[in-house]
Length: 123
Image (cartoon, rainbow, N blue to C red; front, side, top):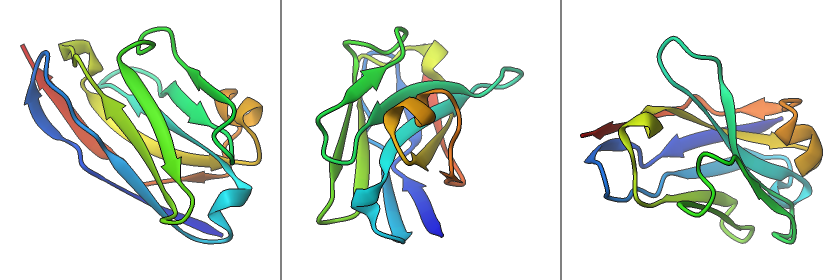
């Protein structure tokens, strides 16, 4: 089992930044690719970003490419999502996730989910 706990969401104005984080516990964190998904009200959950166990393989949704940066610290069992130039359409609950590799994670075949953290961007 892997337990994932997100933090760092909040209410911000458009154009500003946030950096949610996700702390993992349980099985060896460095065995897993990690990622972020989001779900806006009335919409399906969508992929945001993923990072491989060693950080060598990173991918983003087109909607966040160039604005968001995913990173991880295996010594701290933590993954981060630096979100810059936030837009109102980025408003959603952001979920941390873990999977055996980035391909599975990106396809939505996720082994573990966090409980989510709310990000609200006002115009």
